[in-house]
Length: 117
Length: 117
DNA sequence: TTCTTGACCTCAAGTTACTTGAGGCAGGTA
DNA sequence: TACCTGCCTCAAGTAACTTGAGGTCAAGAA
Image (tube, rainbow over all chains, first blue to last red; front, side):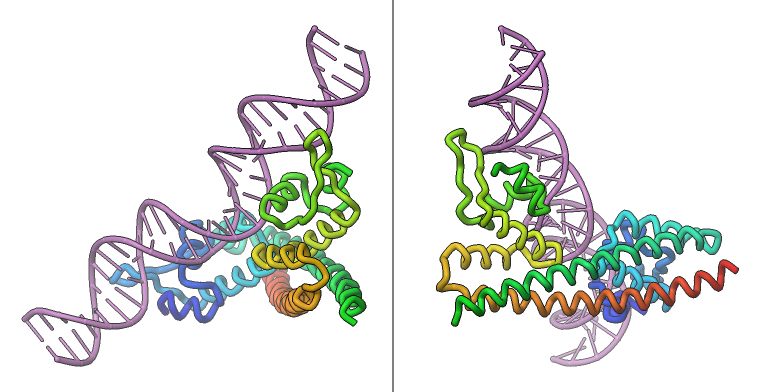
């Protein structure tokens, strides 16, 4: 499929996909005889994973390392697993931050209620 | 107190605090006779709130609006409340994203397990 | 067949939200 | 007196995109 469809499926926008490709984040993107990018279903799965990693705060350098490992094939699975486990810990931290912030907002809103009445 | 202590208390770093002040995000920061900033406990509470809002993804433009309202005093409490309620919805969305990403990571990790054995 | 439209391309510049570095003053200590 | 620390401003650098200019190419309308 072409870039518009890939973008619609993975959640990233077209410009971001092109940008990610220049940064080496998307291994094995093909080109048609017209010079335009062609994305396989595997490419789209990969992009979808990147979308969620980015959305939850993985830095680009880590994604770059992750992509480089992915490009090297099955021998790197243990390393990739480690990266995802580390990211999992980040998710836990973010969840904790959300909790803390929600607490603070609730307290603040309560105070506002008091001042409004 | 001076900027180093304020930074230690609110979680923002010194350069960020100065930057926020130039952007109008911190109303009523005093200066000593030496020209250095002096932060009141109220300033620090405000900075701490900004810290958590930023940490959970509030864009600077919104913080700017929020700060401008805060600077105008009690008449703007209803508007500020609205901003925090909106942010609360963003928190819920982020939590949902974390859930989704965790699901995806779990699935991916399971596949890796399969390939490793 | 020529014209237009739409989707794609590259490359350069702009944007957001900081971060880092250069150069300088002011007050306290050795 | 010389230095160190903590603060100051202003300019430039960075990350991760986003937008805009200018161009190609294939397919359908006139």
